[in-house]
Length: 149
Image (cartoon, rainbow, N blue to C red; front, top):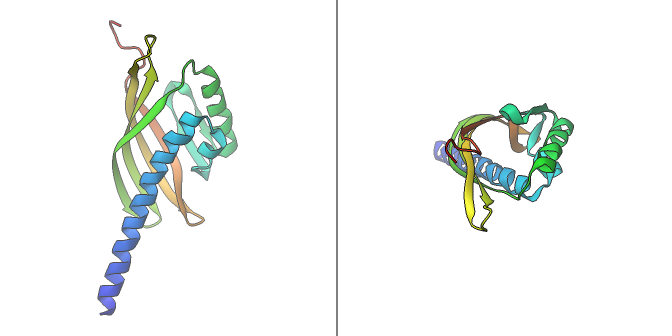
């Protein structure tokens, strides 16, 4: 009986961890689209790092706020991030993940267009009882300007 209870508790903890990490991905896109750079930076560990290729890199929440403030100031139109296809690998209080992202923006004619899409490769950590990004590396698979457009 005790083994059954322990097994059930472990399985429940795993499901709760997976759900919290999935919500982390959703909150990432939501805060980014809303321009709430402080809430966005709060999704990262104290020493969290973001690596966004030519957009920039930052380590620590203050530096992440600074970087993303500059990114938001350069944005010409609002965007909407769709976060999909998460693959999460749990290992105690650490995890790794790969997710796909798609950026949707209003086109010149008012319709929505896919501006770009790519992947994030993540290292996650449970810090003070909550999951957060330890390192988030972004990769663009299809750039904002496609050849021949």
